[in-house]
Length: 190
Image (cartoon, rainbow, N blue to C red; front, side, top):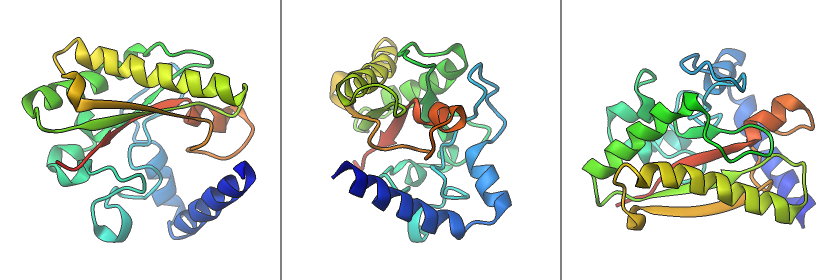
């Protein structure tokens, strides 16, 4: 069953990537605004090119409604446009480069108390499924804790872990693994 899900996800990713030019794919993976210690930049458009979403609807492939919230969510100079927090191997500690991103989303949520998000914890493929689910949950909870310390209410945040089940990049090398060690901030419809 796991192999079927992986093959389906790979096929869907291949369809999206073949529709992009090389420049669009590169721009969707890095925006140059975060020069983190992990060596990767934010992939807040989830590999969908310019962030306009599926069929121009403003929705990304994971149901994120952030692009419909306001222009600040699409401005690459605004931390709200970044919705992916990356982690080091076997760690749930938020790296300093991602604190401004979390702070910006926390401030937005405090100012918009009816807005809800889901924090999706993810891991690379190494480790047992049980370990990866626990680590993904801990990563999402770390981001949630940072937001709650700034006044975001418990009712605004849902935490879920996908472990290794929703890879952002396929492959068994460091390049793929570092893109998969992440927590994603997903905005929900009001």
